[in-house]
Length: 267
Picture 1 (tube, rainbow, N blue to C red):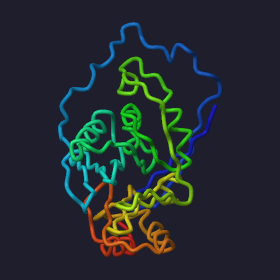
Picture 2: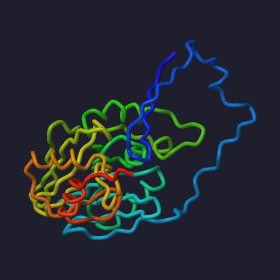
Picture 3: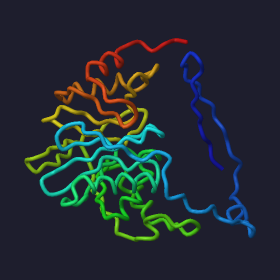
């Protein structure tokens, strides 16, 4: 058996913990078998409800927005290659971003994917990225998970990696990782906190941009993680003009500071 603690916040944002217990004993194999009458769902349609829209953020940096699911990726141009920050949601959406990114600079290969953290809406396109030959750059705590994800067979509804098998290539971020070639520099830093202990952010020192996921959502009524995030950024002594969230609008750093230091509503 096993025990699980569920956390829930009430209308006053008070955290309540509830413990549940499952009975001992292994589940019978019959519960895990597909019914003989099971018919897999047809593959996803070839058209997205909302295709990624690419918007310049700075010289050599584009935001790939999928507003119907409030999702953002970024494409970063180096002298001889392109980098993608975040392969979101699922195969279809990640592959759409990858295809569009390659159209931006057809003469430069897309070779790297920076992953912010392991939650499904930020890592759902990891297998698709591997199938396209991209090297995954992620927090060191995610490496084993992503290696395992890459090994999993997809036989009922084969995904991009099942159809186009490629070896997984992973580079990890410990305290800091700098990706630079002189024309573009991206600093990758780990961020600790309640949302995820295996998260990284991307900082562009020349452009003074900070790319983050989920620890701050511009305009949100409650900013659970922003205060702690602000303190971590202060310790890094970074010079930031704009926050580029992977959910929500790009905003001035001053707005982030204001919202991160404002008291949360009590009702």
